[in-house]
Length: 528
Image 1: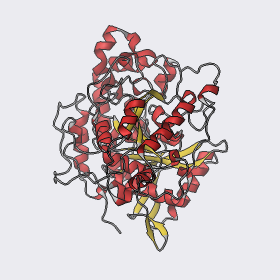
Image 2 (image 1 turned 90 degrees about the vertical axis):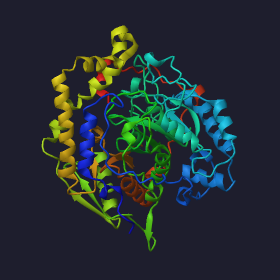
Image 3 (image 1 turned 180 degrees about the vertical axis):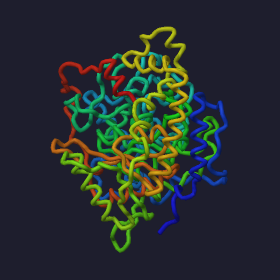
Image 4 (image 1 turned 90 degrees about the horizontal axis):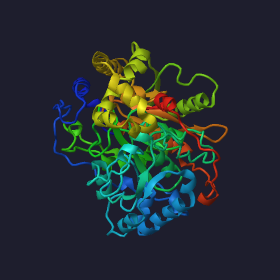
């Protein structure tokens, strides 16, 4: 049995104090956040880890490959990055007119990157999609908003720079909810991106706001991609489109160079095909950044790739660490497709040696602390940086205006009370949930988004109509490694994550009928 992961070594009280300090400020760098771990000076885990390379069982269409499989073929010189890229570009030409996943495709830049001298890491030559709120040097970064329609940043966001430094190829920028609020639409609310599993039905929710990234990965137009989450924007599209997505602990990945939504709740993270790929992506993205104080004074990035490598004993899969998996009240109750999938999921988990499924209570005043009354304290944080725009021309916010106006009109007393409620919620989660378990299943992402704890989303089944069903698992501060280990073990004994959607109608044949439009009220209701 491996040494215990990060969640056994982090001081929970220190994380609570850090969250309280972060709740007291809404502009970067205005406070020195308390450290939760002493700096050790150790290096970040390498992407040249042997466990990051997986020999494919068979090799046909290269767009079917995971990162780990493509990396193995590239390292063994059985596949050139140029070949892999061209296979994806062919699918973009054929199908993105239907999917509408991309804002812009960087054709020549991607081809130039694919011709670079080979590197050793698992991301070398891997085509990636970047959500359009990440700065990309010399490339428009619009956040699907009128406000940024002409914005061309002079540098890459830290996360993008790290992916490129690791050899990743940026294929393009993806569609998103305007200013990261809801599913991908134009700034005036016309739905763009569809779910890759139901490409002719725009009414089927593809998840937002990292919609385009999810559809690009699920539709096999890139190998993996990145999004941001403030209220479910990585976990929701991952669950909706049969992907594995990680929202890491607040501060694990730098927010520098990302158009903000809510300073104390924005989290960058990957959307991938399985736990191993998500671990590779997060390993590249994570780590301290002098430009973002939230990343400083944290525990070292653990070996996520090893954590996402299934452990076997006498041929059978077992958990890397003995783990108590908490199940909240009503999680698998009922006879709906989701309830049945959850029941089967829990049975499969319980059968894996090292897993103990336990019932856990919800903390005191759970519905109050996680409901809209206190959840809405996020709104002033998004309005404050945009006040000059709110004073100048409200039309720039398009269909998402309501949330910014609500934030601008929010009372100071309400905001402060809400920040105190956030700290109380974290304290109760740490004491009343994690006293009884090591990880906890969730029916929605909002509670852990409020308090900055990590989450992983992954597939657990399908409806009778062939629509993916996923689940969300939450963990203790900086325990992304334990979350990955559980998802990897589950994926080693199931095959949901290996299934791919059928090809859609070609771009030339795509015809959806009348445009689907979200109203301002719908956007306000759905906004993260």
